[in-house]
Image (tube, rainbow, N blue to C red):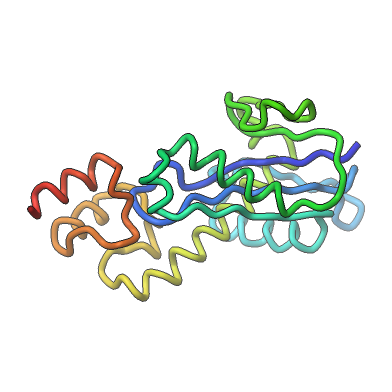
Length: 194
């Protein structure tokens, strides 16, 4: 049975896009005859994620990413943005599948009988773990690249999350055009600038 695993990354970030991954793995993923150990991207080191992402892109039957920009997040809100990211990722899956497992407690495809939400699936269902990993690696790489345009914010390290470095950069440099203006810490900074 072919299963699409889905997960998103970047929901809590103050800056940058939201990214959803969708992955279909072979029925029994193996490397050199041994099962691959896959888990939630947050529980892996950066290097482990990168190695895993390479393996996923080489061995998965399908890999897709759905991106939602900071402006879109501001316009529709984070919950709808997650749904949009997942819809965009799933639209790229062209092969047929029997089941769709989404990490979390919200089924973003309620009209699709193949879809179900599973809490902590990113740590217990391999295809969801892989979706989490490829989305995280892609988003982190994007934030590291865009950091060159936004020097001083530290996006290459905190990737948009609300760290002390990010807070200090907001105070010093102000709000950039990749910040999510609907997020309260960013709104507070905008108010102090006006």
